Length: 100
Image (cartoon, rainbow, N blue to C red; front, side, top):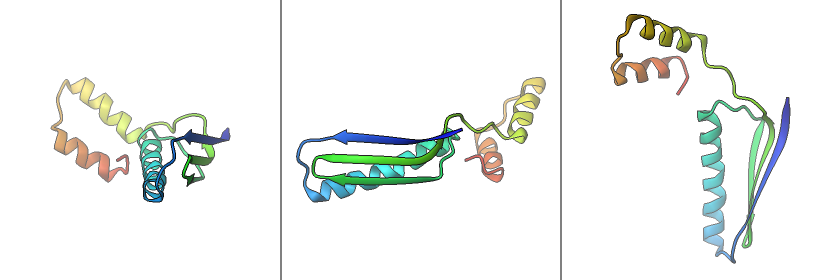
């Protein structure tokens, strides 16, 4: 199930350069956070005025996407072997599988 999310932040009077920067930052950071937490959405829009910054996320999912089966298999194997995989190798595997 999906819903829309509207986040409105009230501010003191901001100069236009700060408003543009805030709009960009809230957009980029919200995309990054949602991707990191595997939360799906259809579209992100951000708006602003000197006294308001608004983030609107259309059709945001209510639950996280499940972890990749390959990643879960890797975790189980690591537990069974009681081995530690070097961090660099783990990062390479996660990138290959599109998890990061």
